[in-house]
Image 1 (cartoon, rainbow, N blue to C red):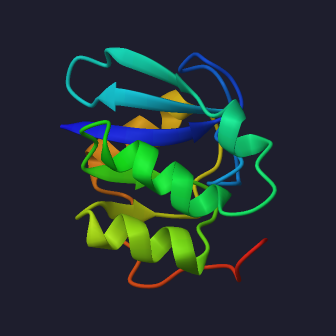
Image 2 (cartoon, helix red, strand yellow; image 1 turned 90 degrees about the vertical axis):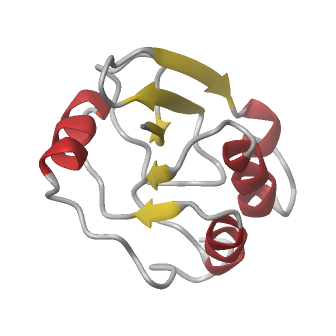
Image 3 (tube, rainbow, N blue to C red; image 1 turned 180 degrees about the vertical axis):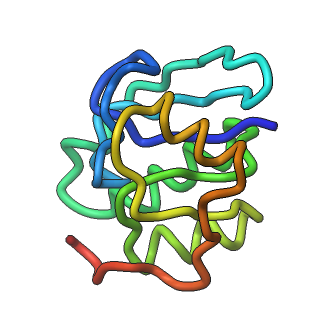
Length: 119
């Protein structure tokens, strides 16, 4: 399965970024092989508005089925949900640790955003 992880860096050792729409990178990871595709999110990071929606569209086009992030606002959450992605928030630590938690089933799928817009 492919998952997307909001990351501060471009490796699995990098810390999970607490921001979704304005994270520096998305790591698109195959949970079995741990093969990583790095997606630079600098265009949305510096966007004046709509970063969450644009980032959600970027993730949905990546083939990922789930998103692991620190937080997710309402517009991004709605867009991700409409694309059929499961959203997991409250993720901390390294991207590698997040994958381990996901594979063990330790994470809970969110049914609503966990922060207000423009967080």
